[in-house]
Image: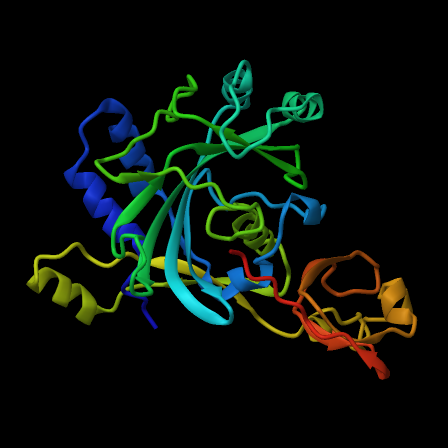
Amino acid sequence: MFIANLLYPKLLAHASDHCRTPVEKYFLRDLRAAPVYELSSVISAFEKRTHDDDQPIPKRPPHDVVWAEYKWDEGRDGAVTQKWTVGNLLVTVPIEEAQAATRGMRPVKGFAPLSDETRDLIASAHHSYVIQRFYQCDWTEPGSDVPAGRILCQLFKLLAFANSDFTRLHHVAAVPHVPLSRQTLPCFGLQVTHAVYPESNPIVSPWPMETCFALMGCKNVVCDTVTPTPKQMRSARRHRERPPSAYRVLRLTKIVKTAAVCADGEDGLTDEDMTTEERAGVRFHLRRGHYKNLQSPRYKHPGWYYWPACWCGDESLGKIPPITRVLP
């Protein structure tokens, strides 16, 4: 099924018509060259991921320049109040240039100043990239002052620093005046939002998106390319519209217990693979999806695997209901 309401082609059309400055021309070049990933099918599994939940799994972006977007619904008291499309343009930059940009950087409102520990992590980083975020409110409840259907651009960019294998990431909010190439804010006449949300909110936090990138290194996840049909291409030409964009989606291929079989064909999961919680008697509860690195020589296909969320534990010992925290 082809998703016709991607944010990417709408932003690309707007940027093409409102490209004025040299910086905007650089940005437009990156936007045109970026492969498009639609992550709505997997982003909900990582909705509450933050820096504190970071796991030592590679989170390398799939390309030096990449566009990733997803749909997200905000709610209150169990009811949906706003429907958002969130788009992110990631552009790799030289590590020396990114490190130099953080020297003397003034703190952004809503973010803590750079600590000595953070500066040490930045100094030892091997890779860096810039994240520019865009939003579109597809629907909002009556009476809201959020402009529906209009693309918003985040005021500041995020500088991401990673170690050699991308298992550790750290983000720094960079204000537009930072002297970094591609860093001056290209507005294209877009309305700029100054909003700063909690790190756990998927609308502005990069962690859920970057955790999705970790899926690409898992043995039981594949990336499918969705292309527009000839009928859709003809319809676009007939109405003099920009041709629909092809995009890629991530798909979990099979239950991980089936994927991680041993060379003899039997189930590869043993008591050694289970956590202390799995071996001990615990109450019946919902375990969120997580990653495991199977490296035993008995596996036919060792490597990273993604375990989907599942119910586990002993129901006779009681049940722990899942708790959902609604952000104000």
